[in-house]
Length: 211
Image 1 (cartoon, rainbow, N blue to C red):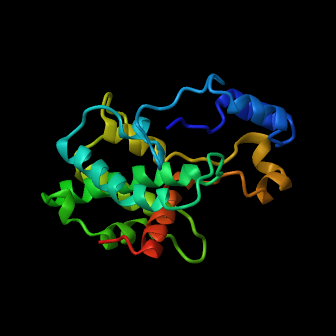
Image 2: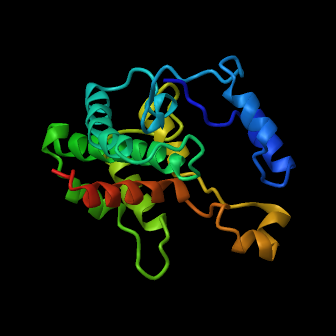
């Protein structure tokens, strides 16, 4: 199934048009030859291939299989919207779920299947007062180190995934000082990609799909 989300070029054009997805853009993107190349590893969760990477430990691959197997049916059961602004939550959340399944299993010497979703939820929990992801980042950092990984390790798909997930998404420089930027919900702050893990865990719980 072709991924119809806007390309980077189209996203820039939408921003230049004041955030409007015009009829002309929609008509062009509806053409079968509109130029967007589908990700061969695309799932209902979005293109997870760049998060999963190539190779890595067997437990890493098993963790990804479990995460996709649990999340994909929940996402697929929801109304399809290729331009859903929350689609990234599913992709990032799948990466976070696979990562924590892998880290908990590895540090305990257990199978991925032995890790409960409740244990992942306790790792991903956000404080009620701030909703900040940084405490969760600290907990995952500890697991990551105990599992024997280094953030700057070359060709390590686990390190590449966590390095991007934990990155600070906050606007920088003059952008961060503008009142309209701080009040605009479309801007992301702090380790916001890690927040996606708690989002998908909540949707799993609502769907009654957690083990």
